[in-house]
Image (spheres, rainbow, N blue to C red):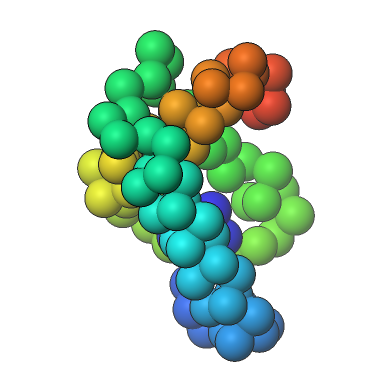
Length: 98
């Protein structure tokens, strides 16, 4: 979420952020390729609520751009994550209180 909502110049350790992103991408590709040939979750992942970050003074990218990123650009990735949750018997309401 931070990589897509916080401007690059505000991230204190770009290397760690990049490494985390690469690890998550590899995990999702492995799961998708091995277990989820055609992920079709029952629910849609909620768009992250950025209010808490705002309240803490974390600089954020334009809200509309961030929302578009999560709803359009990351749609497939979020579909895989939702399918993983459902496969393990969870819902977004169980793990994220929007």
